[in-house]
Image (tube, rainbow, N blue to C red; front, side, top):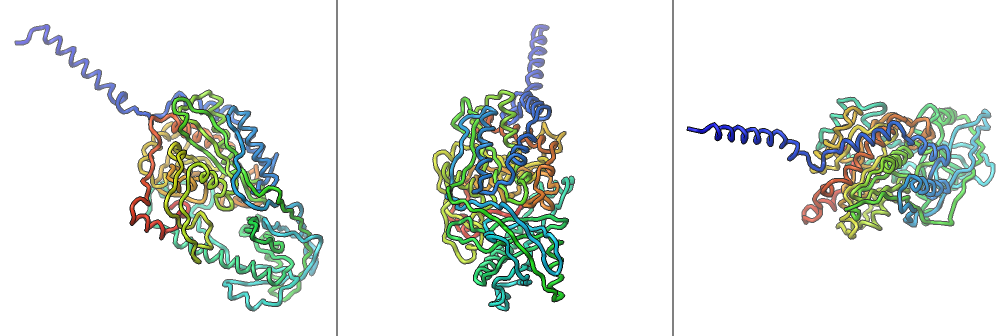
Length: 553
């Protein structure tokens, strides 16, 4: 029979056990991946009530404008971003050279007029790295309809001194979402991993298009045409203009190559198809820059504390095409990443790891700036022999060999990228890294009220996180609302400040700052994927499969 004292002891012991187990979920399961909600609150306060993201974007777009790699404007942007990051309180802000890139280029003046059978101004812009006209010239227009290189034979000896209207097949990437916000169903489709892979079809399409374009360009040079004109893929006066490969020193700039608004192009084409002669007058003034073949990335840091030798990186690409101001591609990403580090400095955080921002150049020509930085600091993959099939692909899409790393590679915990326009962040691509999925889901919890939180195992491609992912550094691109990125602003003359969404960029900067801070404060480095080429059979498979995958795959 128990005494009253022993029953009291049992009661006290039971009470202690209940109290201990009542706090165990907090004590045991609140690990280093639980966001510090006090810091998150401070980030939100600074980012939503004292934002400078639109001022940063205006400095790039209004103050500097287009930023073609190698151009004087891009070098202005390099210096401006370096100085702004220094003003925000970052240290070691500097320009880091990579290259050589090749020739710089800018368009100083373009006038295109129809002078027969009517007189009217036409809306067109030259492709980057093509020649100017060296004064006012005029010529008869000839329509060139080509679907295969063999179709060029019928035009031999007929194009000298002519302005050639090019009717070529258009490259169609088949975007699933054209504009606006992602619906819940569309986000669910992104989150749900799919085994289907459009890459082989996309690869074949790219190979065919590049082969045809190179054949046409070579043929036009041999025929000594006065200029060539293509129709823009957009309507309503949109001009989607990119460039040629003549930034490379071993590629000679050809005759002026222009992209014309679809409506003005259509009028000329219809006249020619009705056998009505057309004459145009051109005055195109382009300038090349050969004084400095190198290009530069902008880099700066927030120093770490107890783990300062380890690094968390964030970035976006600073370069753009020349038709617009590079506001959504990718001034938006630059402004968001710069604002993210400004927020962290403004609230006075002391990250354990060093936070490093990189603003890359040469992205539009094939991720050149980030690849150059990664090669210098972290390593690279062995280049395999180029075959006739892979020679037409951009270098970043070609098969790669063995991974060769440098000591600094092991000290980078993660890289976070933003480069899909002005849309708010809705989630993140894990690049098939299963270990980071539950971490990111936890980090998104404080932002469920901001329509963010979709974490997908899928890969996405086409931007600078691939340079890091390729050398076994966890590299991630955020999922963003598409808005009118693909349909209006991407590489177009409407890539301007007015197309940027203030609310969306503020939201993105707050989430970027939070993710970077969380990664910098973790007890452990971010989990890495297995190095897939350590296994001989996997190595053989990788050698047979080009790196990269189409967006959303």
